[in-house]
Image (tube, rainbow over the protein chains, first blue to last red):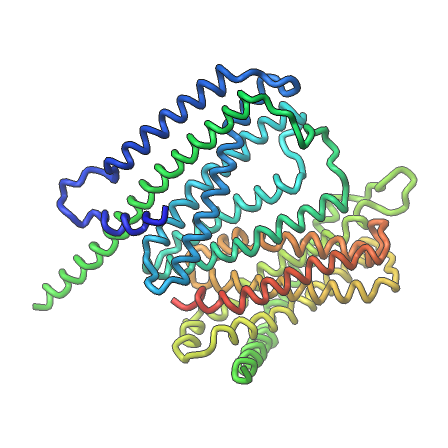
Length: 258
Length: 236
């Protein structure tokens, strides 16, 4: 992952206009691996793995829910780390900023999927779509927080302004999320116990189920890498286009005065 | 350090003087907050909390509603205090003049704290009067501590995110999106602490103190966060 920003700065499409898209041989391979992983997950999740004793067929939802939750948390972690590196490194390389932004976009998408799919699973298993559980509530807060982060990224200004503003915001989110999680946890535990039946903490898991979940996590991680690499390359292209547009305008203006 | 404190004090006095002369908080935000408290009552109505209970649901909800009212007022107060700065490019002028961003943060936080504290005291007072709450005086120490800590935490967060949104396009809608998820711990902590102080939730006064702790941790975290982050956020 660490080499991502470096590659992104070298692949900015300032080269010949024959460049077709943002893929390279490596990403094509990664994409193919991700597709294979997801087909594999579908085969195991929908076919080979057994139905659960208590949850019956609804357990299959978890093969999407758990990997997408994992992916979202991974994405926000990468955003925080990349923002920190951008802010505290001497070079202030915009590649880190774009990595943070691309990762947050993918993270928000998959956090949304996690919440929707989780609600569907909750309806089938707990009988309700939403439960005021600490983890659920703080996940919802996290979702909104990163929507805010993405909004701030689109505020405009120079690339450096965008990078610094959003990096600071991403680090503030690191301050905020544990506080929110902690307070919501206290709120529930001191206020009232969960009222809805929930499965035991230590559900004994069938070997094949665990394997399917494992496949899901790998497939989704590959997909995450593919999405983020491509997204940050298109972001680099957008930034380059912005800069080129400004350069052209300045060149035109200079030409006028001559 | 001395220079920073002096600048912060000047900033705070400037903000308070602007409010004293324009009276926007007094004439617009305070009436907004008061009418919100009345509207909450419409939403809840005078249902008995339990059969045979003399307390109404409204009394039980009062601490939470007063906290919510304070948070909504905070949004307006932040918009106002940064509208003053971004009009005529005052914030840019401050930066161009080399004014320490930390001092700007603390000055604006202090001024906002004072205004918000007065506002929220009036809100809670309104709740006590119009919702018919019987105050238990033994909870006053808890109540005052909660009040000062919570309003400080809110003021610090408000200044921090207000500075970020200041001058941005669509700041009116951006600010609530950024700020409301962040203030959740204050809303939870202050509500529970005030509940214990007033005795509306049926809890003992001693149960309220851990919640003040939550609010205090939040206040310290965002006081420190603002000190470090405000400069990079507004400096562009």
